[in-house]
Length: 121
Image 1 (cartoon, rainbow, N blue to C red):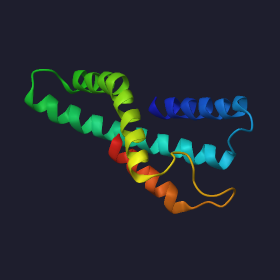
Image 2: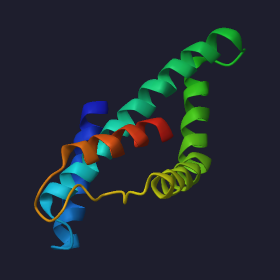
Image 3: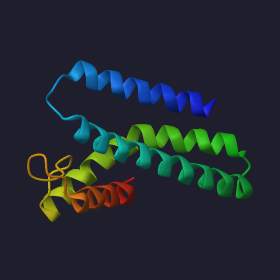
Image 4: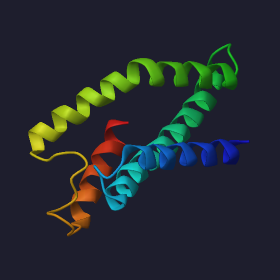
């Protein structure tokens, strides 16, 4: 079920890119999307770990704690993540989604943005 959900999400992202037009290159789209996919995988893993830990020490079971984590992350968390990314980008002087000059890919810029995103999430 999770694999099907993952494939549906990828399909929606590709559809979004096709409808978006040529504002952003496929390379930048892939790099932007990969940051989101990796961050989502990281958040999913952290939510599973927290649900297991909380389920051991509290009266609610792991599924209930996972639901609480997802709801809080998808409501309050998204706003907080946005503000943190804007703050960190302004402090470190980079623009999220920019990976080099023109067509030249600076992989270090991508890695820096990915690391910041993982820490923010």
